Every structure is written in C-alpha cells, then in structure tokens.
Length: 109
Image (cartoon, rainbow, N blue to C red; front, side, top):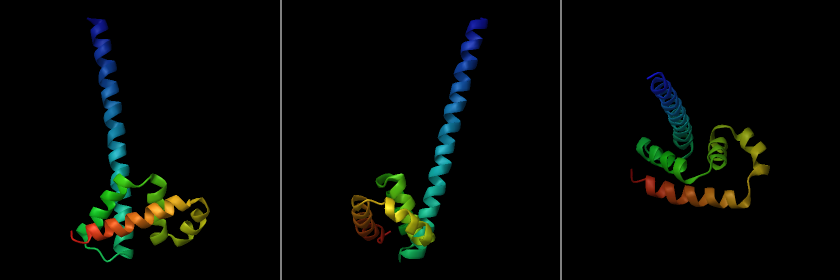
C-alpha cells in the first residue's frame, strides 16, 4: 500500500509540474499575443479583431526571433536597429511576405 501511495504521489507531482509548465507557456503566449496586437494597432490600419488575427498567425507562423523583431520595429525602433545585424535576408523576406499576406487576410476581420 505504501509503495502504491508513493507512486501516486510521484504521478501527482509530475502532473502538477506539467500543468504548471503548460500554464507558463499559455501565459507567455498571451503576453506575446498582446505585444503583437499592440504593435499592430500602432503600425497597421487593422481593427482590433484584425490585429488579433495577425497576432495569432504570427504566433503560429513566425519564429520567436522573427516575432521579436516584428514587435521591436514598431514599439522599440532602437532595439530593432540593434537587432538588425542579426536579421538574415531570409528572415526579412519571410516577415515581408507574412505582413503582406496576413495583413490582407486579417483586414477582413
């Protein structure tokens, strides 16, 4: 019985830890989405729903670095300037295509 309770306690601890990790990831995603929506509201002429659409697509389609650079170009131009040396030509092309196609798609939101 004691061995069973020990295994149950370990399993419960692991499930709690996994749940905490998921919650932290959800919180990070929510913060990132809010930052992208803010940047969209400043830079693009999209509705609130359109900016949310763009943010959701950015979370799904862009790398962490690409999203960070996208936000920095709008909210923190000096940070974007410092990042510029690290932005590859491929990243720039991906961001340009993403903004053109996603802004167009999300403008109907």
